[in-house]
Length: 180
Image (cartoon, rainbow, N blue to C red; front, side, top):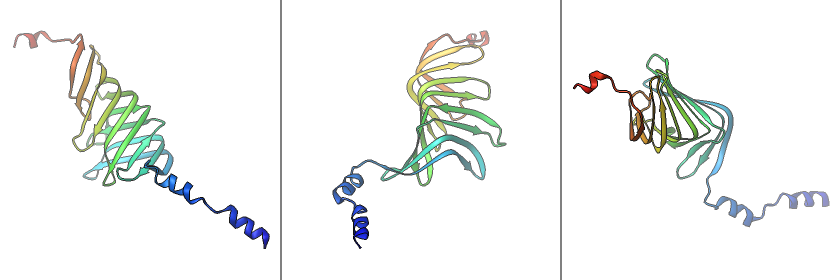
């Protein structure tokens, strides 16, 4: 009988400790997974695939997925041919109606499109609703003919049509473009 009482008293939680954890105001991870793949589809077609070695899912007023060990996102065309690849050291996706409508990539962000154009930056935001990627940070774009630097960028999610806000560097211009 004494053994049972000792066991029961050892399992008791201090209500002050429980309340401090649950009312801390910080989001609590409810799921953690490793080696995860998310597939995003639109009209029954796979549009992108996100792979990450680790993901934490946080619940609360604004649920989100955090990928603290990096991520890789591949964007596909309508025939599921790879168009663009994005890699980053860290990612976070904001959950809205069970969809990650807005995702941020941070730390050594690299985007390579199907032409081989390469974007390097430290922070990039992808909005899956508008199908745009953008940043206000320093960017470096390397193409087969030139290297362009700037601060701030807006692009389609395929990184084939982009606009650099504050351009620096040399840009190759064809003679025909000068005569117009």
